[in-house]
Image 1: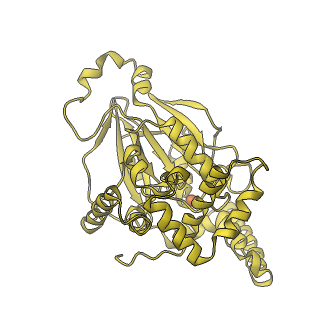
Image 2 (image 1 turned 90 degrees about the vertical axis):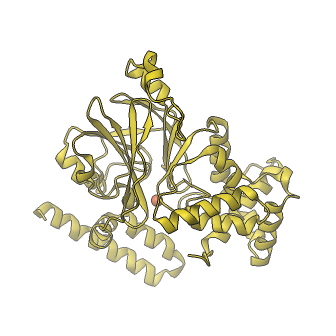
Image 3 (image 1 turned 45 degrees about the vertical axis):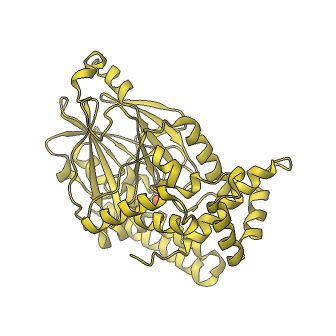
Length: 383
Ligand SMILES: [Fe+2]
């Protein structure tokens, strides 16, 4: 540890001590206090000290997308880092490096890091990678990554916002702002066809492996961080049910059903076990659950998923007031009423909306809030 790092570590401990004092004397603010500890450099050191092991998963075939290859790298307990490799150019882009993943990059040169949000389990590897590749561009949202002590570790060089289109090497990426899990959460949408144009290879499309395969090499790729998981969504740490409702509608307008979904964690089995409780009549959820259960047994990643399947199996995407007589709405509402959470959530939702907000939208937001709250206390009995 250098002197500067020791000073920073000391400062981090002091910040942590203040936060713990807050926790003792203001118990109502315990969640905010815990999050402030986790989001300070204390969280960076905690992860490096206690969570640095990598879990090994069974390897899957390389995923080829136009001239790019996508690699899944499991990090920490259940995080995923993703690599986008341009084999011809020998370059690589890392998405959410939760650890030092230098050994995974060889023989390629790292040209960019994309961070979906500020949590350390997604950025803890930034500093090590930056030291080895000082010219690397590090992208993160302007809201989550403001100037300050954390940037000594995050090394953000390029701030992004909603709608930005960035070109990294021969990869074309669109930024989609999705504030809820954190205020500055973003998703990165890679467009393989645009990337091929960028590479001047669009006329070679036939040579790029369009032969029969269960992987569609020209489908868009969406890296969702902790905002959306397969079969579920992330906790609303800095947002609420209204924010999640807006995200669901935004994504539904933008995404093609064949879009591959690459989430930040392997939570699929638990998420679908919970989804099955909400709608035991859904064959789509049952099949997806069985697949996730088998993947878990075989130590095989469930990622990526695809948007078409998510539209049929992810409870947050199935909330539709017009379908309130169907199983999911009925089962979920029955559980929420039994838990006594509906009125409280409705009050919170209404506070976020203008007075003339339509009732169907309020109901859908309340349902999203109820499902998220029920999930917070759900324990998968088959884990
Ligand atoms: Fe997170």
